[in-house]
Length: 79
Image (cartoon, rainbow, N blue to C red; front, side, top):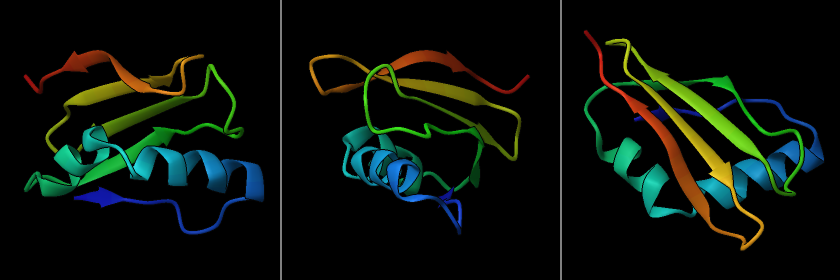
């Protein structure tokens, strides 16, 4: 489950909405762990970046490429 930021400015909201539509976000939503944003893009333009951490300590980093696709840049599992 992803804990989404509650209040955001319009450019950041567009970036979050763009990420929310991906299979990458769906995978985290389906996970039993809670995922929280450590950092999220303030602009919907590349190279936007989202960094999330689970309650168990696993970290995921996603970047919006110039092609318009979000890609996973890093995938650290909890120790």
